Image 1 (cartoon, rainbow, N blue to C red):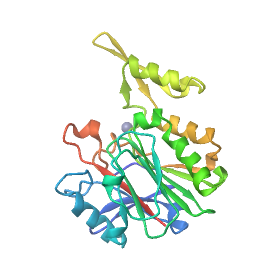
Image 2 (cartoon, rainbow, N blue to C red):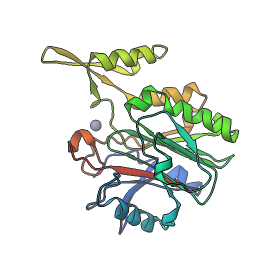
Image 3 (cartoon, rainbow, N blue to C red):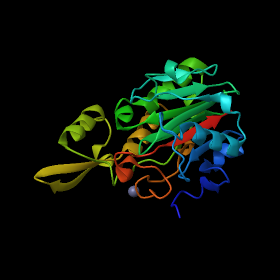
Length: 262
Ligand SMILES: [Zn+2]
């Protein structure tokens, strides 16, 4: 059984899909789900089960299938405002989506990367963002909040952020080069909170980076309140029975998805 933050998260084992929801988001009437592993579901682009996987998940949640918007996700820091359903081909260099429209379902995909839901209950704006290590280093979480302020006049103290299952600090092992890159970008943070010394492997010092902690610090930096950052506390590597993990599954890994709709 999956280990998770039971105060904030609930697991639903449906007929067509298994997924988790954030209790606080549901209480506010926001339709959303993070898809867990089930049968052959795989939300990756170009895979035979891509369409079927979204069919099943949307049916399970009772959402109209033609509301789906899917960005390509190329580890950019680009967040796009969506006001109508558009094709993925128009969202090539995009890793985050925002909308204040009701007839649009935003999506993101992962297998270890961080996926974030954003919600402003005052301005009625939702967001869905993919933040892998590259996106995290490019500060996409912070850029999403800035975009919500610029495009929708959101107040950061109203914005809620929900952290889906992702790789956690005990598994994100890197070499000196990535560690130094991280130090260079985040030198204004307390580095002891985000970088940890690992073992020496084949004569090389390894390090661990806490990408979730960096994301939380970026959100606090742009004045999101700590109480409004809700973490599923689910590690994709530890919970690989239920959650897709590129590190655990290897070359032909499958992907999960996070979807959200007003
Ligand atoms: Zn773990």
